Length: 228
Image (cartoon, rainbow, N blue to C red; front, side):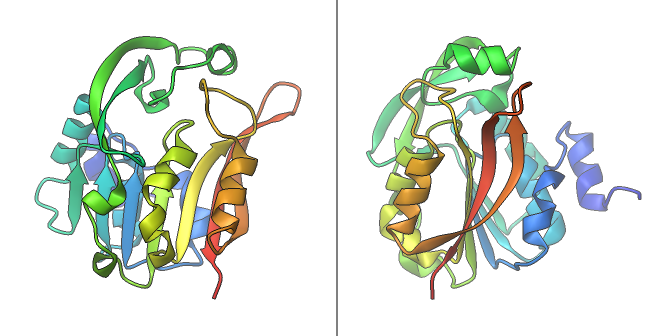
């Protein structure tokens, strides 16, 4: 099958869409996607192809990745990029830059991360803006059929805390989380699940399970649906 026009545009900019999310998105149709940890736009590219009329609001604090995203979506009036990370408190924090930039995190990279995923070691640091989601969006900005996606390399619980006042506005949440600590001080999948269940969301799916060479689970994508 030939790639779509949207995917071809991504490839011209050196960005491949993250098609591994397709199974979950076959059953939903969001009017708006809030993309926290957008990197170069891999997920947003998939969303734009699948849902051409959806509004996409993305957050990416790393300068190089955000610049690539901005070029990719230049002229797309239904896409907005904020060069910031989401967390509970407004301020500035260190981003620990990985040799593979999509493994960069606001938490220090643990030795287990580089053992399990060679080539993801820290190569530098960058000061980035951190702010709650409410600094950028109000409840009225978020329609009933909205999706919140987080891919923030160990910072999931803190990012969710930064969304806390607006979580009830989302119909679905899609979050990558880990079963083992790959970043110093990170919360694990059970912490994330408990946090969202306490806020009225039910775990509805587990996708893209990564395992080590002994078959032990490392991380996965978790989907949550707001209870009616």
